[in-house]
Image 1 (tube, rainbow, N blue to C red):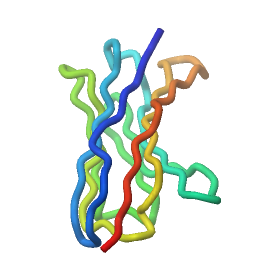
Image 2 (cartoon, rainbow, N blue to C red; image 1 turned 180 degrees about the horizontal axis):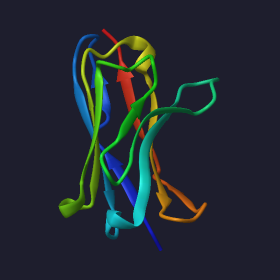
Image 3 (cartoon, one colour; image 1 turned 30 degrees about the vertical axis):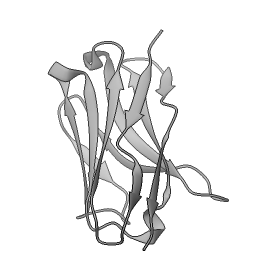
Length: 117
């Protein structure tokens, strides 16, 4: 059974930075694409960023230029570097991975990010 475990969330002031990590229980070579989603209170879950096995990325317009998604296949880990954080980035962030060649999708349990002074 695949497990995705997020870490790195917390409370940060506006303008600050956080790096989220998503550790997979197995090889992430099996996943394409992988991504980060977020869900704020009262809102739908939305895609933040995604990355393919070849390294192609795409970002939500609201985070372009501030967030960077990356994957370390050797460490079976997905990352999200978040800079210049804003209060509107406050949400629970979820790691997502699609099993290559299938419609099977796995989710992590989520990590809370709160941006507040």
